Length: 143
Image (cartoon, rainbow, N blue to C red; front, side, top):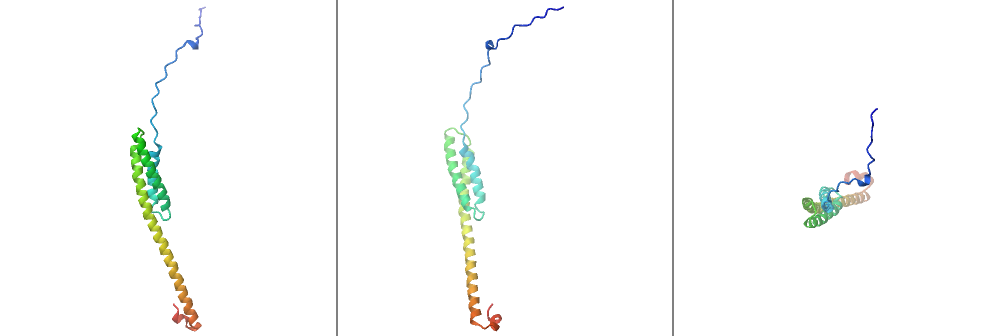
């Protein structure tokens, strides 16, 4: 029969471990630049929607603020300068659109108010006509 010999058990404390890779510094995050662009875009798109001009104003204002702060962070080495710049631009566009949307909404509200005033005046005129003529003459005088 053949003599089978086994190697001595391996002691894990004596086995050298591979060296860990050198840690590279993580790039500085610039979430403000990332947030500026969608805020500006959504604000610009909602600016002309009636009654949403206020949302466009808030989103545009935040887009401008985050764009300016994001650009300042890029000077300190943070990424996404382009996103911050476009967030700033679209935020300004959103502010302009919100001003236009405010004007459109106020014009529509004024027009509805004028229509109600005219209807009230027409009703008053018709009521005065009815009160000043006998029942038989309403169709001839009150239109």
